[in-house]
Image (cartoon, rainbow, N blue to C red):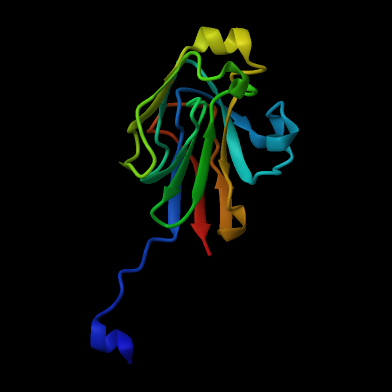
Length: 166
């Protein structure tokens, strides 16, 4: 009854494509050399072994968190999916050295918008790995999660995951 009185609410699309946030090679989540990610303790996802140091948004939404060290960024998509992009492994110990952020909490972002630049050589030298997890931290909100068949990926262009929100 109220829908007819106040008009139909715009339904948010429950389907989402997550693009690669970096140029590089796809890494299955199970092959990320850190059990927090590979055992899906933080949620479903995938990894990218980057070939350069630019990170872009893999989906449209809002920046929810930018770590002070710029080694990780949290995004909430328009349909409520919460993404964490973590650049390299054990990069928090670098204390921000070699990382430059381009977004702030609350910023509206679209696919392909630049998030972070990082010094690839420095990450190779100081971190455990350059493999960068992309994790859906609220995986329990998903109806389906499908990894596409990909190997080499292009930032902001290659669809790595398609999913449906409950």
